[in-house]
Amino acid sequence: MKRYALLLFFSFLLFSACTGFGQLNLIPYPQQVNAQPGAYRFAGQSITYYCSDPKVFANELRYLNKNLLENSSLKEATASQATLQLLKNEQLANTAYRLKINKNGVRLEAKTGEGMFSGLQTLRQLIEFSGSDNALPYVTIQDAPTYEWRGVELDVARHFFSKNYLFKFIDLLALYKFNTLHLHLTDDQGWRLEIKKYPKLTEEGAWRLFNNQDSACIAKSKENPDFALPAEHLRTKNGQQEYGGFYTQADMRDIIAYAAERHIDVVPEIDMPGHMMMATKAYPELLDGSSAGWGKQFSVPLCVCKEEVYQFVEGVLGEVIDLFPSRFVHIGADEVEKSSWEKSALCQELMKREKLSDVHDLQRYFVNRVNTFIRQKGKITIGWDEILEGKVDTTMRVMYWRGWVKDAPLKAVTRHHDLVMTPTNPLYFDYLPNKSTLASTYQLQVVPSDIPADLAHYVKGAQANVWTEMIPSAARLEFMILPRLSALAERVWTNKSLFDTYQQRLIHHFALWDKMALRYRLPDLSGF
Ligand code: TNX
Image (tube, rainbow, N blue to C red; front, side, top):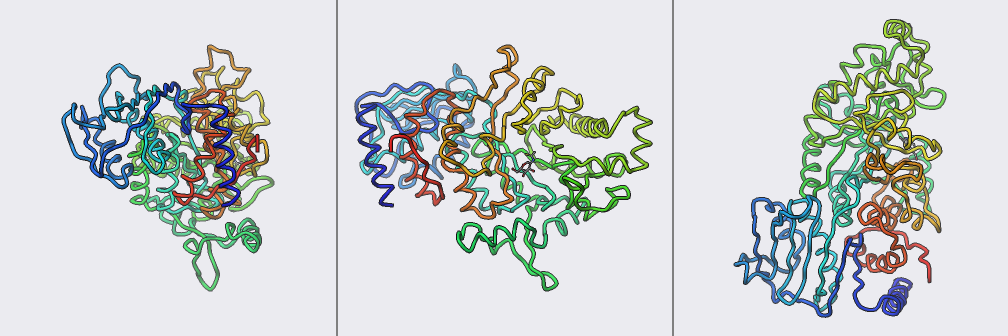
């Protein structure tokens, strides 16, 4: 704490010297900030408000009441008497907002709930940083995001994170204006979503004996308690300790609703045909001849040459589509060990019938067929960049992750796929950060330089991926993602080169994270 106080003090000196008046500690920094001298203070415990469209902004009014004004309450007033005004402004873009603070109070304008909510997050930070005298600086802000996909992927399969914890995680995402939470719900190490048609997926597939990664975490926990497996995810069965957990569909509805109140879209991922060991263990009929387990490099995938597999996939995805209001369904399609297909007589038959030349073509056949099902249900399919290895339907959105496959982003947009950037470096937040991580995250070029300007619009934004093989607890998760999450937030929202002031602003967010009981890593900030 001493180190932190010192840091704060020096940052204050540096901040005053370099920037003088007008710098606000907002992250992401708004597109346009005009600060004026002076500050506004709400008088008393009860704040008078006026909302020009209580229907459109019903959710935002509720959020404001419940989450933003900790020690005060709202009281409705006329427009001229209100000190907090929420106004509908038809001129603004859907995602934009305007915030004005002057001697009359606070005025927020937006066209939609989404825009208003972003404005409220800016106000939330100004209130948090308003100091002991609650001074809100006079300012005019005009703001809107650069990218439409501002995401974080959380792998809840390798290690599980409870519904209640996800609420806290979603609050953090909302604070930094992220709008997408991609949940990696299934993998070889755990199936985390109840599927009514296939109950064994969670009855059996949500639990496992300790694996190598659990053992590694337990060993590390002797020195660092953040690596301990939380007791709430352990159980004893037949005298053996198991690790696990899952979301019922009712749990998931709560998570989706909580996120929706914060304008965060929850995108489900059911990773297939690889990464399916829990499903193939529970339902061995999804394989042809081979047994569930590990292949040479990855786990034995679903046998994509069996009709039962398509029934299964459609059964699972049907429930997923009914449950998640998102426009998107992520089907993974990464890291598929295809050798078991070579040995399958059914696959030989199918390949002949469909004139498929090899097992890679089989993967393309599977992906296209699943995409057709998802399209019929009115949704958009997302896959990891391996789907580019065969020519799949261009209605599919690609998530680029394999940093070493340099030509994949250009390939995706040249074929007219929408693209989300999640390159290993710097966006794999499961990788240990080093001295330069914060800068490289901040300086990420969302649109790679080899993409021509007329194709740049296919790049929808970027996302941090948090794989959790070695992240068993909330404390470890937070330590791994903070502060770099805030750097990504500013990249995808503001997309300007403000790294110097970002570092100064960042220092003020530590106290906020302390208050929110979030763990974080103190970065090596330049100048200290
Ligand atoms: C690659 S990203 C994976 C994950 C691992 C991650 C570890 C992707 C589509 N596949 O299954 O968890 O690396 O960093």
